[in-house]
Image (cartoon, rainbow, N blue to C red):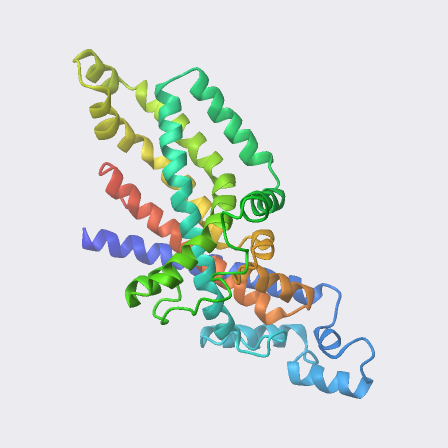
Length: 339
């Protein structure tokens, strides 16, 4: 088993390296061939020509594109993503500050989507009729509702109209001190440090953006759970269990649900990757300091290093999520082999 796992892991790492290399190469050349001069953005449109040329030389923009590409790959191999031309800090530092915020929001949203989507899909498969029509309505709403409109409506109703949630000021309210830094996740760090004031504030700030993102991700999860469960319920072993008088709860939880989880896991991996990529609109609406706003500001200022750093992180995240999902397949269904 160990030899099989090592062979599988090596193969996946090679494919991951090729994928990440391809993504970095594509984004590098796309960002560099698009119109716009980062040095001019940094200095302003009325910059002196001599100052502009000096800054271009300092930023390495005066070198041939192939040379710039080679230098960039050499930096990446060494773990150096360069300096952000927008913030003036190393991209590594910027991402280390912002990734925890995105991770916390993504995981919180995914938990809500799982707790609602999977039971809803399973129940729709078991109880045809109005439940199925309700699920179809939720799916249509989740796919068609503009996420920025939903975010603004939730703020208007729950904060402005009824004052049930705090103002959308980021990860904490203005009067709460961040907990002692351990993981960068405020909910986790506040628990570890016993700071329940920060825990309450961070959870309250997570509710609206988390629900907004969860609403648009419940639809694919619930639909996949419903379709997969419907197929499993038609299988011979389920029909035999019914004929033998096995209770619905027993054959659904022990047999049907476990067999229906494989396609659901695939959907969860895609959804988590989407959430981790950073929702720019949600982060802007709720003043959430994640990588979505960071890469948006980088795009506006042609900040190549920041854009490429975010793409690298997203690529690695997708590769890691796919690897974890593949391993979960084996745990859920032992008939699946890593070969």
